[in-house]
Length: 493
Image (tube, rainbow, N blue to C red; front, side):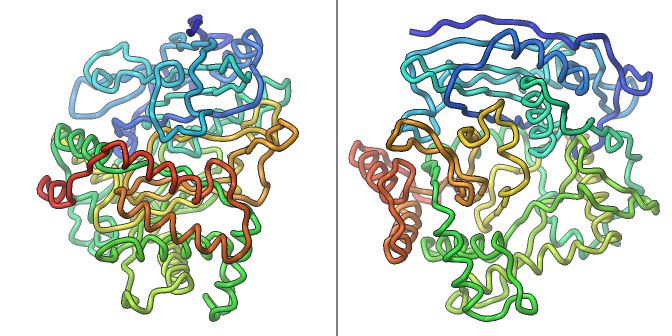
């Protein structure tokens, strides 16, 4: 039994940006995908405070109240600043949704709702944002869900929006005004990609654009043939892995970061789960807080920059499969990021990304961003402020990313777990790991984590531990979940 009420929330006052009524969209922002995330907290939120604080937040983020507009000439697109009220749904339900110990990524309409991505580029009034706040009646646990069109920004931009809403809900000053300068970047001055051979080799996936229908079918197939894994591990486990990697052999002149060390460990565990190890690693490299040479100009991207301000950068694994270790893979990650340390090369990568996205969109194509069959994507999000959008529950808040895809590993601060006294607390040093794998690979991957946690005497009685997930996966398979061979998936390519 569920009960919901719909509110339409507009900015406190009609607003614009620098007296403009529309904002141009660079190529890399013409992404039809959605950001769908929930902030979880242990108790209900106050509806009136939610509405008022959302109105104040929209005052600072006017693009969320806009609609897409195609320019009269060419294939240029912009966001019209219409100050249109956004949809806020608030209610209660008897369905536990993501709060269930048995949840494995299933969407339920009481917790999940999408804006219409199919009409976004064809109808002028399709919204670009909505929010849904759902309280599980049994426990009072609450999920604040947002669905944001990816063109408004990447995960960092979405987090900035949520942190602002959270701060204003608590009566605190926002974390800083958003910056919209990225939307005004000129078109990249690229006459031919032949002079970008080095960068193109690292962004080769962007040169392969497909029909939208193909990408939709492929994404559906991945969801049908894989299982979602949401794993929480203790901070002491991460630290012990880090110490082990540092002792193995010097990395990067003797230094290896915690993130690279544990990411290298996860990649090594995945490589041991596949019949054929992958040969390429991808990382998200953000340009926020950095300078880049763009069309011959030195541009600085503040950390508050809105839009998509990153490069999905590939690095080949040059170590032979039988010689790969967490250390060598950590070194591969470091080497890959370091190749974009130069502002000239970072600018060239950003320009090429914009150029190839624009070209694909002009041809009514799409770039595959739902995972790569012959690569592992790693996105280390620990320590970026993800737990600062906590709406007044700093040690008890968590995060649910509803989107997941095969071999795309996301790592962020651990979600809270129920304590013996009934309260919810998060391990400050722990991490949450999200990815999708085919069942046979998932079992091997989880077993590797389970064995290492047992060897290091790490407790695993909680629902999101590797041990618990192995049992749940066995239960799912025993109920007849069949997964076709990878040859079917390869045939689509």
